[in-house]
Image 1 (cartoon, rainbow, N blue to C red):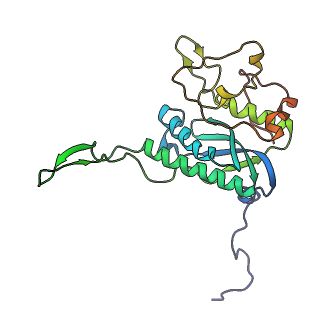
Image 2 (tube, rainbow, N blue to C red; image 1 turned 90 degrees about the vertical axis):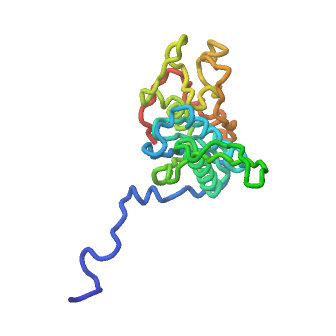
Image 3 (cartoon, one colour; image 1 turned 135 degrees about the horizontal axis):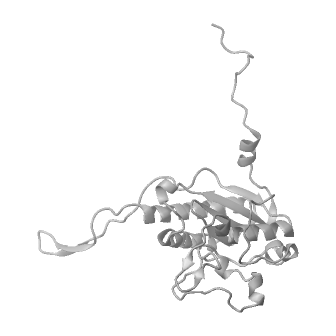
Length: 251
């Protein structure tokens, strides 16, 4: 049997255009805005839109909040994925910032979603009669949380910046995840997003506070925009309403 040489079907299979596109990461200098999407294993962590997972992501965001070269400007939690609008000083800062957030989020989600192990902390006496404390076993699970690599799209125009903000902050309407508040009716804003902290809603022109903010509510910690596109440029694309139902983004 002849081995080696040029023949049909030999060698590594050629990658598709889509797989090659997913491997490439932005190379740039200077602050730029991006739309990032992260998908999670629902079988492992369950729905993201629940109280425990919300607070796990909120704690993980403080890791990114401490960085000087990477900023999370807006965020929304959907059932099985996370949308982020971020700014980065360069390509390495973008990669490190997203990876740092993913690691912190995975650790905290694993702690929240895993079963409790061991017993509660308790006071016991040893053979000599001395007292000592046996610490409680932490709950948690092991394993991957995020599915594959993150998807990133550069924001390059005011029209695109406006559509990305609208898509991320009102994404719960896109997925029909609107819930009802007893005594207040359907949600006017997505409380599983940074929408309550966004001051660009057109409804602020008619009301000083167009949706209720509850005393126990802890908002997701986002940073003000540093780039012109996310700070003011998006307004050239038109206003954003609380009641907009975004379709699929067109890049």
